[in-house]
Amino acid sequence: MEPRPSDEGRHRLGIGEAAWEESWDFDFHAIEGDLGGYLRLGLRPGQSVAWFWAALVGDGRPLVTVVDLELPLPRGPGLDLRAEGLWTSLTCETPMEHWSVGLEAFGVALDDPTEAYRGVRGDRTALGLDLEWETIGPVADHPHPEGYHLPCLVHGEVLVGAEVVAFDGWGGRSHAWGAHRWWEQAWCTTSGRLDDGTTWHGDVVGGTAPLGADGLARRGRTVTPGTGEVVIDPLHHAPVHVVGPDGRTSRLARSMCRYATPDGRRGTGWAEWNQPSASPSG
Image 1 (cartoon, rainbow, N blue to C red):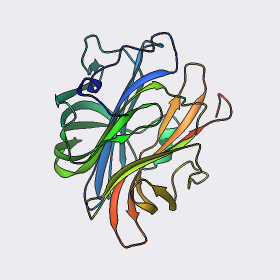
Image 2: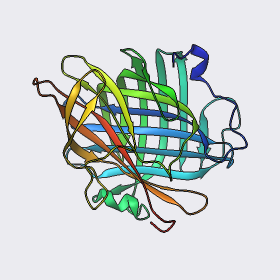
Image 3: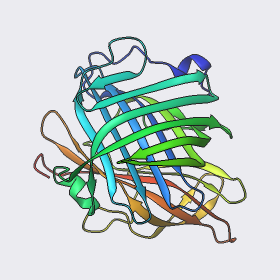
């Protein structure tokens, strides 16, 4: 699709369909791959709930994750949420060019990322973001559901516990709306930036994925738009356990990755693998 500036806002659709969801995703990664994170807001009007999750990963750090699948929908037309232990604001400063993201929340710190699949129990830890996403490249399709992705320069501050970290790196943002089949459809999505400035966002619905028995990504290969074959080397994991209203579950393996191409280019970015469970207890 060719997005219009008006597409940056909310789409008043899907009220009667439980699977309909509108989401805004923001990710970031340092050039060296030693720090990164993401934030996602999903609105599900058919269930009268908002989903929110955020994460921070890095060298020598535990995964700090925030996950809430039972938030009230934003009251106004914007993308501000307030709940116990959580405040976030997503603001479109200039359509298709510039967004700012603020977050003040309490999450949990996990030395073992697979704990995120088993109830997210860990040390209560403050996580804050004050970051800007500025578009640096062409728009790419977001094929499931309808939407788009933009590569970005990301800068600002990250707060974790009592630590304040200045951040200046790369990332991307996606906006999508439509039926999102978390519990019926497997997919693999990769995005990133190589050292020659090449950026991409690619999605393979139902594709195979290099996953271990623990549900986390392993080293593997894929083919991405504009780059050809790419070796994926996961650096840090930030998975999410996605539980549906009927008890069905899916393990979303998200990882900050290092990428390499056969012609010697290198880069970093994020990848995710959705893994629906075979039964509600999975």
